[in-house]
Length: 135
Length: 135
DNA sequence: ATTGACCTTATAGTAGCTTTATAGTTTAAA
DNA sequence: TTTAAACTATAAAGCTACTATAAGGTCAAT
Image (cartoon, rainbow over all chains, first blue to last red):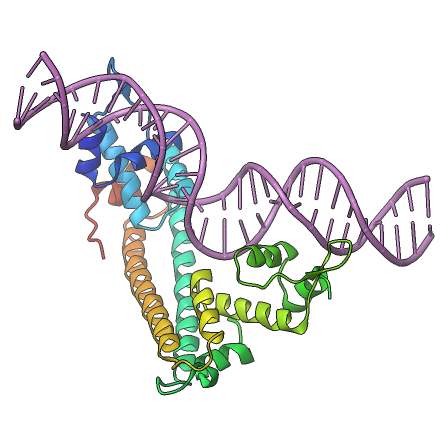
């Protein structure tokens, strides 16, 4: 199959596929005489794996790491689990930070209504005063 | 004051200050005869405002928008409040997405322990199977 | 005179693509 | 048969918000 079909099948853009190839995440496929890339079922699986990892928020570097484990299937999978644990704690700290941020934003927003002039805007005043407790 | 002092005062790097100037977020200061930038109290306030907005997660474009409101202080501040409301809902949807992601990651992690080979790793299998319900 | 701390500009790198430019190939319609 | 649409190719730039590097000018102290 050619790049367009692969793209449609997995739901990515053709440029993204070339980009993954260039980044070493997708093996370079064979080429037709005209230079067109020819993909196999392996590539479909590989690309789908990458996309699912991306949906899970893994970086390309982390995906690369997972692929290296797949290439050596008789290792213990401790490292895979550790990678996921790290990622989970990363996601959790992001959530915590965003929740604190939301609180701050909501309280800032509460300091103004829409019936003022910019000059007297509670929101702008709140930012300018700068009594912000980080984290 | 010179750029290094301003940087230390507000807690940013000198390059960041030049970057903000280049992006039109900080007005170009006067120069000494030797070309060194000379900053005033106005710049301290301006830079501190930018930094506080950044801590609140606002983009440089959004900060630029807020500055344009500050430059026209007799408008109603509806737009300021709307900007903040948009930002709050953006933060909230990020939180929601990350919470869903965390759930997914935790359940994936639960499908494996450390006593397997990569070949039999529940995590990698879980990703490859791809029974992922997005959002 | 030279060291060190400071300042200058310009350029490239970061992540993960997306966009644009330019050009060659295939396929289907006119 | 020609021609236009749809596909493919490469290379390079753009996006965000900086950070880092290079190569050099300025200034105070030793």
